[in-house]
Image 1 (cartoon, rainbow, N blue to C red):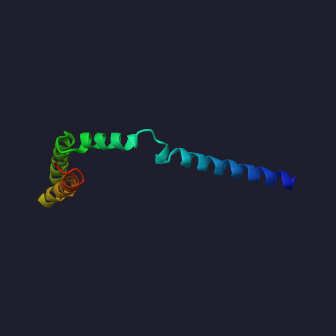
Image 2 (cartoon, rainbow, N blue to C red):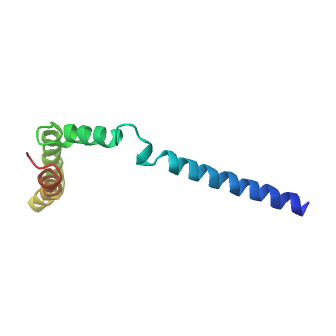
Length: 103
């Protein structure tokens, strides 16, 4: 009984290791036909969504202003408006400026 359990455990380990090795080899860039297709697609997709001409930033800023206004009115403290406004706008500005700079 003990020998059969050890053999079954070794088969399981061998199977898992062979799966990991095969997936690693299949994902290697040397096996891709035309370079990294997914990388090119993701780069264009992200530029379309978050680029300088994207409508995402307009909606993001409008939602930020609405959230800041509601939070400021709810708390009756004008500094909440400034805090929420700056918390969303500063990271948005930094991402737009340094991650997707205008060409």
